[in-house]
Image 1 (cartoon, rainbow, N blue to C red):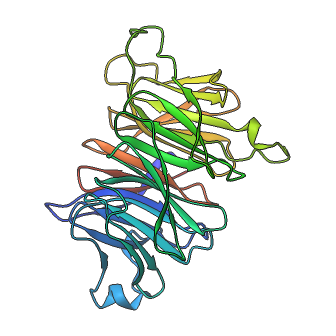
Image 2 (cartoon, rainbow, N blue to C red; image 1 turned 180 degrees about the vertical axis):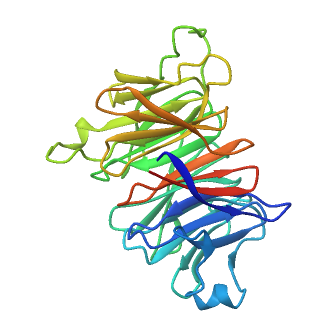
Length: 323
């Protein structure tokens, strides 16, 4: 993306805390600090009026700030997590809440991922745990423990056999998804100019999308680890660094978030300097940068099939970036 094509401006006291596209590419949903969950048309940056509940002004919502959102594989269901640890599941077409987990966590839900068959919802939380919740049972089924600070991301490997978490304690943990047993702890090494005795908060640890034409098992899983430094690392599950992507800046060059393009060709990261950094994953080269907001950018999400990235920021904007 080279330009901001469209921008949603939230109300004065509001801003988006999270956003995601539906896997079918139809919707972009945001969760805001005032508890609203809104469905946008990313081409116009207007609310989707073909959803009658939005047209009537009865929105999907939580009492507290909505800080995590994720769609099921078929795009029918949307899971939303709030600052008070409540998890809700909605049918997007009707805006109905079909499942509610009052205390999915003891503190806010920072990240949501669905299992491959959409039968379970994986959540990460400020309460130092990740948990899996059953959609049918409406119950919390599993807990992944071991971190000593906020868990900022929790994802399944592509085969669903492992859970990978990233935490503010500076570690990435790999768990057996079924038994919840801890398989390994990975500590991403800090960049050379920083102290090697410190741990740097892991903003996210994401599994690389399957590169086309490469049939590998889950042990070939590659993860991208974004720490609160000026470097993002591509690592294997043994903790070896395969490639590094640097902002090239020591001042205000630390990354706050990242997203991978769906085919795994590009890595998009956002820095403390409110800029989007676009890296080629194959070459590791920084291809371009683009200022995307006036204040702190909170995160990014990528359209499933088009070259569109959305950036949400504390200045109350949700910006759609395209080539």
